Image: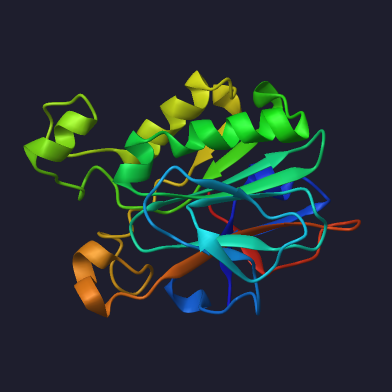
Length: 218
């Protein structure tokens, strides 16, 4: 079951990652995850496995600890620090985007793992695009916009840049989960309660990268 990969992250020989699609359910047998609540709460997963507490982002420097999040329109974001071998997985819905969850992740990586924001590598996976994410005025106001469509991927990219990440170190998969059809991605907005979830995950290896069956998609 193939998953999508970022060439930027795939170039790191000690890192394995993947953005799940509809056909790649259970592409990893077990991973560390959270009870996602659309927040800006960040959890460090070092020394911890399985289902952890409430939150929407995980960070680890522990080799062999797969960390992942689940999405079905929200933005999956994977981050790697090539200098200190730290990884993060982020679930950013519109609430988490407004709350700048990516900023808190960069801050925690900087404070607790000595990461340099300018050296971080970021991949932003498939999510609902501005072509399909129409919102009401109360949500548009949260983005300081009068537009009725929101570009969550771009909003998170800008917040990462504001946090010190180099723009050239951010890759965005322009794959809309809503309009690419039910055959490729799960979409809660399209399928409502019938929607499944896709797992996006990242793992620091002990040595060279282990294959996860990924396909470049950027």
